[in-house]
Length: 92
Image (cartoon, rainbow, N blue to C red; front, side, top):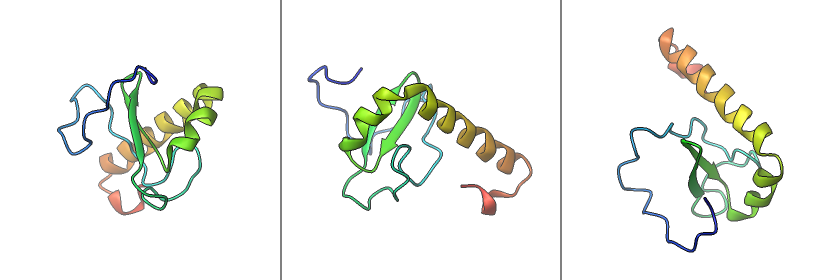
């Protein structure tokens, strides 16, 4: 998990195929557009690629992990539903 002291791999590398890609273009916690506060803070949590607008959202995520994992899963589900109907314009 976080805080192991190891540097994270560059986000431009191929994402692990077993990891669910981040489904939103906004911060999972702060709802700010990713990149609006510099490079997004990206990490993998329980097989999910998580992105924040900044590392400052980490504490809130840790305090309410279940809430944000549900938000992530709901976003993935709605994105998949949109792709299944061919309506990718409204996804997100």
